[in-house]
Image (cartoon, rainbow, N blue to C red; front, side, top):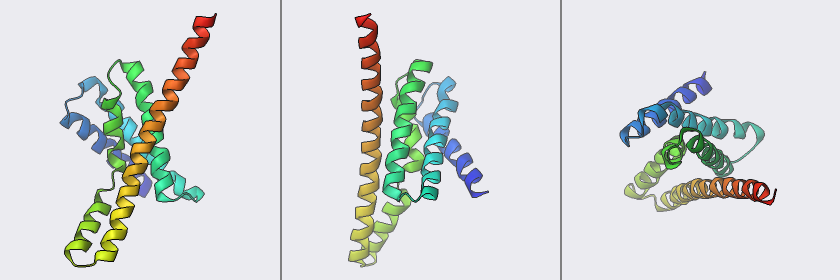
Length: 149
């Protein structure tokens, strides 16, 4: 039940983010699908023993590669999908807890939570870059084979 609720909320939040940033209406469902897929990967990897940072990295990589494919299929920039797709992965509550710890004078706890937030944000950025790189290398090798023939 929790998984279904998370899937629905990630779909809706990604679609709302796309709506907020004026993506074409025909791509709103695809934006939601990118967010849903990223959150599904993020939610399923801990079942195999993965830590939060690795889950976030893999989910961001999947979102990035899916965004590249959706951009070709729907003929719109991939940022429409990648930005909306990573919204469910953003560590907003973790950053809030870090700031709250600093305000309450719990500096060690605040630093710990702040570093965790920075590591999750770094995992998102690294995953997006890796997905773009893998897709670009795959596309270039495919075109190089076609040129060689």
